[in-house]
Image 1 (cartoon, rainbow, N blue to C red):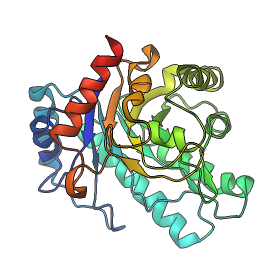
Image 2 (image 1 turned 90 degrees about the horizontal axis):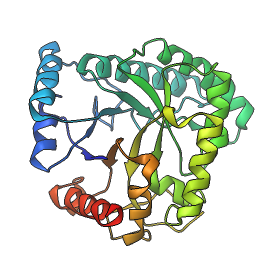
Image 3 (image 1 turned 120 degrees about the vertical axis):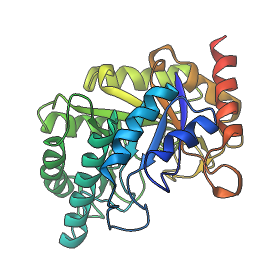
Image 4 (image 1 turned 90 degrees about the vertical axis):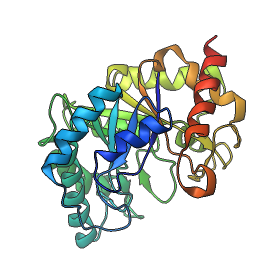
Length: 283
């Protein structure tokens, strides 16, 4: 398992590799632009080549780009919808530039219009982005926590998208431990986790599972509240090791998205705790 972290790309996207190395990360995830604004960053193309060079030099494994949290591909509002599609396309283009393995995104919320209406918005948007994917850089659907009419709260909903998009060869999945837990899958219970992975394998295929988000949870099982907690400080605690040690989840990039100290993101201590937890449960 390539245990890593979401890090800042401030100062040039290539600087993310140095930040990853500094905290002992074996994989890395970045935003390709400020997560607080729709305006895309005007990257210097030379930083893409430098990113690839530094990744190879540092031996970093998986590289993921996370789409803006502002994006909502199911938005009934045309302005938000168009901005979301444009932003996700931009993220995919930058991801291709740096040689990322995937772009992780939240499908979005239909905001009460209903799943079918939401799908009518989501599917053509995803088709646009999938047209930009390559064999190197996939589009990865992340399971949601399930609040507020979000799409992708279950394996069944992710499978619906997969089927409706004709099982696109470069469409994959990213599973988040916290999101699974708060949407009702007890990842601290080996049998419950195995059942979830069996469902994913039957509906989509485990070969489409390309990345993991490793987060403890500050919200209860089945609460549908997306509240991450630092490693060993939430309700999963030591038993987050069940998720980390599952044999079918090994070899994947496993990225921490926890707040870390002072809400500045994962640091070396969080990465260390995750690695030690993984080691204890796989021993």
